[in-house]
Length: 260
Image (cartoon, rainbow, N blue to C red):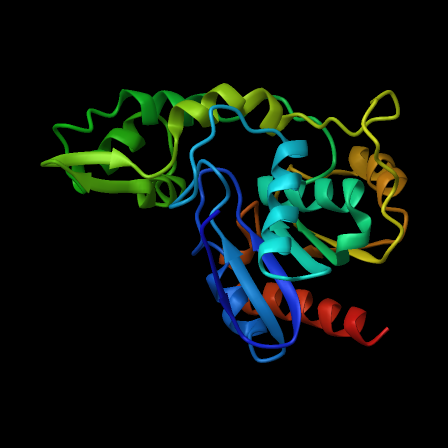
């Protein structure tokens, strides 16, 4: 798994969301590096990390435990956005002794309905051998992708042999999508998970529909010592829309958690 580490102090692992990469939480990393040892990662099937034919939260959690072992880290704080938040939660539920703190940004520990069909259609239908960044953006807009999301997705374009290719493993992501939007940690699950008993923080966007009142019970059952904050005037990309406030909220929680 590709990663970058900077700073000194208690370890913090930052995990990006679906279609993202190591730079998505770079602004947060910079704000934390004066007090923490911060490791940013490319999740498998993203950026420069290994391509997996199939990815699910149990195997992703194991991959992050292997990363901790390779870095000689006994336990770390985990901060994840969207899919990255689900990965962080899976680590906490399956490997609680390796987690000293948990921050989850705009995602709940629940299964979601598909909401990326237009994105997959747009990505799959882009002619990578005959395009440029301007035409690629126009293509995304024609497929009902808003400009902000389109610009985010097109960060995955990489020049290759006179054309372009995707840095991400688009095929692997699409095959794994039911597991990415799913959630295996239920009362009926045979997985060896237990509710995470340390303090954790959930931060949601006030205009986002990813974390709603109907998710409250599932969150409390799995993370009984949860605290929650809402960033008004932000959607799902809360860390990019109000970075200073988001970074301060996360850092305050981590510093307070470190001193307890």
